[in-house]
Image (cartoon, rainbow, N blue to C red):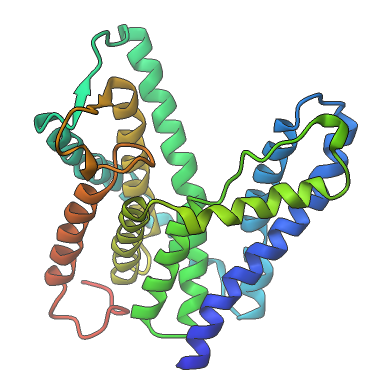
Length: 297
């Protein structure tokens, strides 16, 4: 078990390092040929290529562990779980945002958008939510969870995958330099500077995301074929966050403002408590099953 847990931690770190190196190698010549006059394009290329490599890397890892596509948790007959999950996710975080508004931790904006603007906001938030959820659920509740389950038990698998899920949100950089200073080492500086920000992540935001990962990972184990449900819930969360950040703002004068994180002023200590309660209810609902790896009827 000890070696399995060690490999479950070290493997994803090594995978991320290799992905960062490859994304830097691929992005640099593209940046040079583009003739761009702003280093922000290089940062964007490294980020997008890195995301693509993370997904593509699933295939050789699955082959090496004799895992199949079905082990990701996607099942065609479970597709209708996506809209149901979206509704649940929107309700979960919608209640959280409603509490923030009722306690005046966040306040409504004084000039709401027009009907057309609101419709556009909803569509953009929906697209962002589905895109983010598809990437992250495939990686964490799909691939990473399936791989770690080959190395260790379900409790460790859910915990470790939730840890990396939370940490990945803080990998990013705004490192910059003059265009005249850009050289072969620049993409590697950008790629690896992003990892340095994980250690300075706000604790309350990290814990909120960690508990969210525990909730989704537990649900995934209880419903091995239900990744669509996790995807929908995740998309619903992102949808509500995007909308709430446009239609409301944090109240700096509220004595309770510290209950939301400076990370995005939506999640934080309040969402930690709320999701912990939902996680406890989820586990209690399935308390009659002796193992988290057993699906409910």
